[in-house]
Length: 90
Figure 1 (spheres, one colour):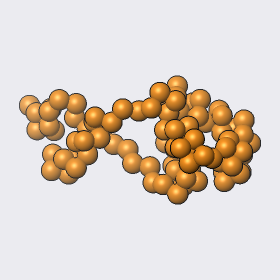
Figure 2 (cartoon, one colour; figure 1 turned 180 degrees about the horizontal axis):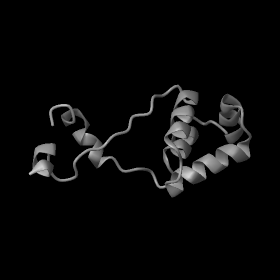
Figure 3 (tube, one colour; figure 1 turned 45 degrees about the vertical axis):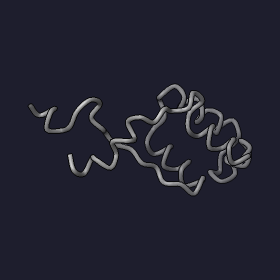
Figure 4 (cartoon, one colour; figure 1 turned 135 degrees about the vertical axis):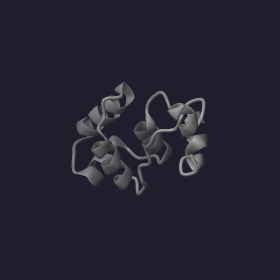
C-alpha cells in the first residue's frame, strides 16, 4: 500500500477519447509524418498506432517506443479501485 500510495491519484486520470498518443502529438503541433520520422515508420503506421491505442489493442512496447519519440517516459501499473491492497487481501 505504501508503494502504491503515490499512484493513487492516477486512478482519477481520464484517458482522452482519441488516446494519449494523438492528444500529445497534436498538443505538440507534431504531424503524423514528423512522429513517423522519429520512429522510422510512415504516417499511415502512426495512424494505425493511434487507432490501436484508442481501441485498447496497442502493445506496451509500442507505447514505450512512442514515449521515447516524444522524449517522455511511459508509466503503467495497477491501482486498487476502491480500497487498498490490504482490503483486497481480506
